[in-house]
Image (cartoon, rainbow, N blue to C red; front, side):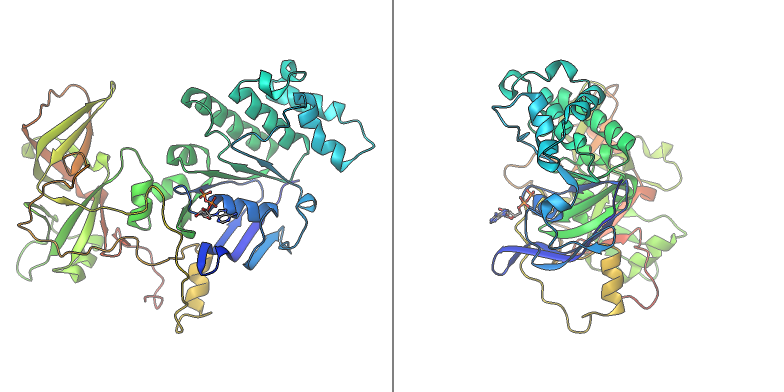
Amino acid sequence: MTRAISLHDVSKSYTRGTRVVDRLTLDIEPGEFLVLLGPSGCGKSTVLRMIAGLEEIDEGELLLDGEWANDLLPADRRIAMVFQNFALYPSMTSRDNIGFPLRIEAPGEDPGTRVDATARMLGIEDLLDRFPAQLSGGERQRVAMGRAIARHPSAFLMDEPLSNLDAKLRNHLRAEISGLTRKLGVTTVYVTHDQAEAMSLGDRVAVLRGGVLQQVGTPRSVYSLPRNVFVAAFIGTPRINLLRGVVRAPLDGAMTISLGKQYLRLPEPLCLDHQLLRVQQGREVIVGLRSEAVRIAKPASARPGEVHITGLVEHVEFQGHEVLVHFNTGSRPAVVPDLEAPRPAPPVRRRRRDSGSVLERLRNRAGALRAGPVVALEHPADDAHDPAPPEGRLPGDLIVRTTPDFDLRHGMHVPLLVDLAHLFVFDQHGDRICPAPARLPDLEE
Ligand code: ADP
């Protein structure tokens, strides 16, 4: 049996006035593999612990298969947890560790058959008589998985189960977990701060920042249509290039986005998304360019939709199969705070006109709450601004991925082509405005 897990407007505070989880609404389908992704401290484990019943829910409701479950005892939820630190009993063999929860659930029954079947499934039969101290990290995590699986739970909750393992083993076990949970068809909620792990495992990924859900969607959709600049910056390697720009939309000339010393000229006729940028005339925006949006090539080889800029090579990172080139294009990079460890969101006061409205309920259903702006561009962009990088940052404002064939050295001026079909534009608060978010008519703020 597998189960649906729903959280509706769920909040949690450990200290008064600071919500570490803020009005979270999330519907997880039976059999789905959902990843909760976000920087350390953003409330992921707290969400997991509330689903497990290990943490009280302050506000909102938890539904298991549509039934109200806020007060259900953990043991009655038929949910198994797997932790980062394995949480095995050191004085028990693997066999006893796996069988222990079964003995608690059915004291009179011999768990032997189920333990053996589980061990076979995980390929750990030869580890059953060893103690945790006699196992490697990967083996311990397999035993911990075995303990969760043997109970035949209706859902798995996994809290960074691989982060104590080395990179190679992590990749291997990641594939094992993916295969196993799909084979068992059991709903899984998996917590990680590692976006690559989230993208490779999840049917859907829910991105949290400061306790607030930013976006939930398939890995493909959160990558290709990030709702805001935080999601755009958190997901993807290398990190998306974010440059501060100003929209210039003269009535009698071509529309451009000025990037300090250079500009992107939007090709005519303007596509709908670029037409919509016209209302931003004179305003500062954040331009997002993933590395696939820029290539090193001469202006003459531009394809339709590509525009030309120039970059000064500041730094070259050789990575074997590819090279990351850091260019200075004379623009100012936009800094997204809280990417590493956000502060919990301060309590959000509901705006009276939205309270309980259709708009708010629709937003909640879409899983798109907000706790204040993701960024706030404090100084107006100045075209003549000195683009010297802030201290501690690598020089360059634009990272381009290329093949190792190019012999690029520090100080070279290089022609670049920017594919405007891959252009992201975010407003001053970090919300995506291009491609335009799909909006229902009459629901504009
Ligand atoms: P994550 O799993 O995303 O790293 P957590 O859910 O563990 O984040 O924690 C979210 C926030 O709540 C953090 O600021 C953390 O310090 C705080 N927190 C977690 N557990 C407790 C607790 N038992 N008492 C007080 N604060 C807590």
